[in-house]
Image (cartoon, rainbow, N blue to C red; front, side, top):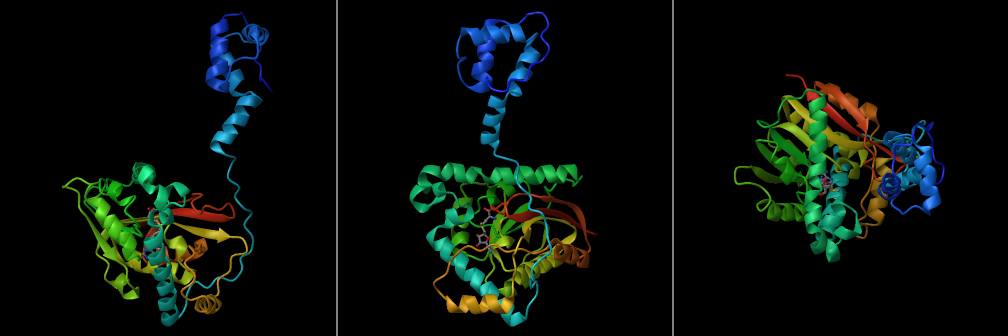
Length: 338
Ligand SMILES: C[S@@+](CC[C@H](N)C(=O)[O-])C[C@H]1O[C@@H](n2cnc3c(N)ncnc32)[C@H](O)[C@@H]1O
């Protein structure tokens, strides 16, 4: 065993079988020969030190790293490139229309893969992996519950939840168990149709879920009332002026005392966004480009929007959700004052 970390041996009280099982259970293999087994029997004074020795061996640590992956690398934050976070109403309309075109197309072509970009959720593989797909949403809800619990947020059972960017309803049916009512909003009718179709077989008759299509900017003024905002892996696909506009509308609509729990990327080295240049580029490739995009809004703008709506920041943490090591994504938990 490579790099074994040894403790001072005491009396020999461990058996040959215990050493063999340590090889099998911790290193996942048989010992090389009886000589090495005898060496471990003689080398460790008790079971605790045998276990510690195996858990600290280079061989085990190498396996552990390949199982859980290396520590995420947080890029060194540097000065930003220019980022437009606001634009004219006309530009905003065009930006949102472009988001709508991309996601409607993705919703028609690869709806499940567009939500979780693993090949197992591509259309040709989806039927074999469907159960797995629908089960993944519980992770998001468990995480939400842990955040709420440690921040002393009381039960959500009487609240109405607005899930902004619900996609196919992957998380919606899990959220339905936690709230009095859930409204899933999305810009893509194709995603909403799938969510609508899937939801009835995944919730109890007593659980209440409905859906809302965000057709355009005006839709954001007609959102239903809610006490809880939930939005993950959604805002990141919108240009910065759209993100700030939507967040502003959502927090304006959030009830007093309500909670906002959402995610978005806040830093990406070399990221820059100029509305005019972006729209010109989009116009040049009109109709041929349905690539999922990633965008960023620096934290200070989010804090400013929160402040404007009387929201207190309860917690902000990096979350690794932007699927690139170069992008720093954060989850925000806010409470609106009552
Ligand atoms: C990656 S999927 C995530 C879906 C869902 N949040 C989940 O975790 O399963 C992103 C979803 O956000 C929707 N979306 C993107 N931009 C949006 C916007 N501006 N307004 C509403 N929905 C949007 C897309 O149509 C898509 O369904």
